[in-house]
Length: 307
Image (cartoon, rainbow, N blue to C red; front, side):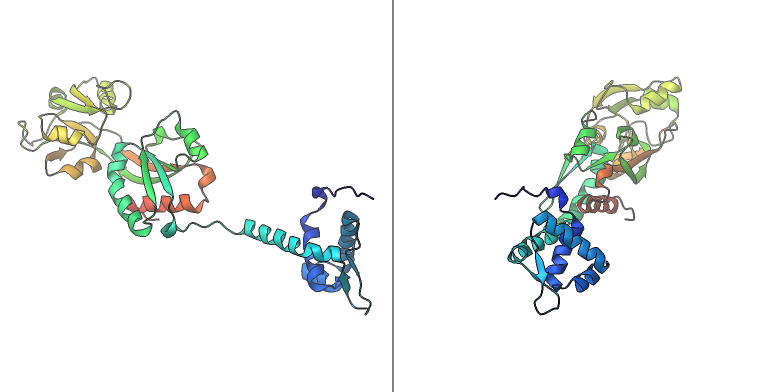
């Protein structure tokens, strides 16, 4: 005689808990109390189990108290325990042990925020989590949304213009533009008006678009002015060294330039420029992820902000 295989969809969580309670207590009243249901409800569940397994599973004790599991029910005991342990493990909150982790985190950012945060972030992480590695990658704007979604990039750090509207944001730091020249520049260190600024030779950092016209040049054009840009580089890190060895001026984020005050004089540019807001951005699916949350905390600390 053959029996049709039981559809797995017919076995629900209530029935698994009922099997477990009956195997533990071997008493319908006690098992019902364990599950917080009435005795008739427990009897109805047992009836469903008997239909599903085509087996009594539990029979009345010949001594008149409780029920006894049949061999089939006893055979189910380890399987029921395994299922419940698996469900319990599924419901356990995920954790991240940074100290023992060997994970590699990928942060997409341009050179300016990398220079501002890189050393502090690495020093923090190497102390708290010596097995963790960091990878700084230049953002590839067309690919970044997919990279953030599939986990190839953990966090993007930069200005809002480079971020997707759906990402979650938290500010890391504010900045402003400053102009720098080499120590001993022939123009001196006195105040500079807009005409003088435009007439001097400039270095511009531009990674896309017109290599000889950047953010500052757009604002100058709006004022009807144009500065004399004679050199262009794609690298923020290269600019201070070039300026320190030439008579070129550069106008870049102030926080970065302040790291080079031994070789550069730094002063406000003679035009109003909007502030720079550097934030960190992450995909909303990672908001509750312990590893991503830990990385965000490290970035906040490196930026000098409260976690």
